[in-house]
Amino acid sequence: MIEIERKFLITSETFKAEAFKKTRIIQGFLNTDKKRTVRVRLKGESGFLTVKGESSKDGLSRFEWEKSISKPEAESLLNLCEAGVIDKIRYEIKIGNHIFEVDEFYGDNEGLIIAEVELTHKKENFIKPNWLGKEVTGQIKYYNSQLSKQPFNTW
Image (tube, rainbow, N blue to C red; front, top):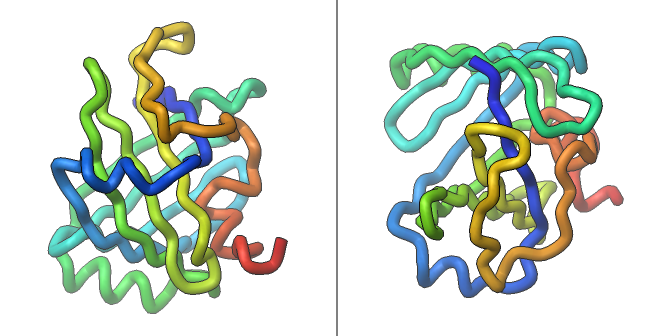
């Protein structure tokens, strides 16, 4: 249940042509405490409730627990969330042995595009596609929970 991932900004939108899947995601936060974040997500027609723990000092890993819930349950819980709902399209792109999840944000975070790649261990090598830009792993302002409070358009 420990998630290890690295985050990057994107240098171009050429990733869209490489995507094998595209899904709209609406998410809100029941709790945005840095020691435990509780997220409600509507991903396409599926709902999820996720609890994330505090990030490691290097920002590469943290506890994550997720449970599938029904779409109506997710919609109801979204109504209880703190202000600042996240609206984004997630593109999934297979590069080598990894799947990059690229989130293109809308609403107050319009213009921000972030790629994430999940790893099995912190030192794992992966192929970096040419559209991958500056690494922002561990920079809290790029966490969705923070983007819900201080959106990209206010930076």
